[in-house]
Length: 70
Image (cartoon, rainbow, N blue to C red; front, side, top):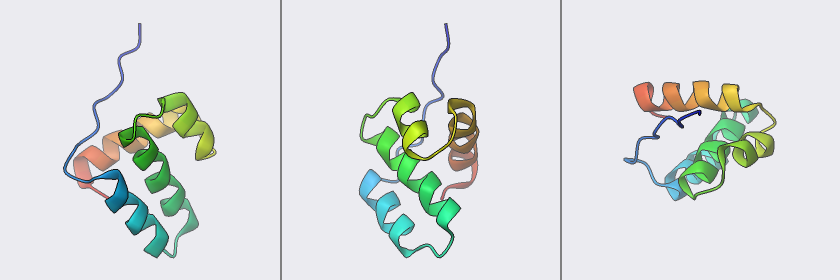
């Protein structure tokens, strides 16, 4: 059974969406929007699909977000 990596809670989904809308990097915006979707309760599979990535890539980005922030 796979256990989801917990995502840090010091940024809200609204804050991540705001950062995504201000980013000039489309890939960064995509990642931030996928992370915001996870914070809103969307499944990791659906959030990954929405961001055009697979679940492993989203998992990698959750690790990076947890370590470094947005």
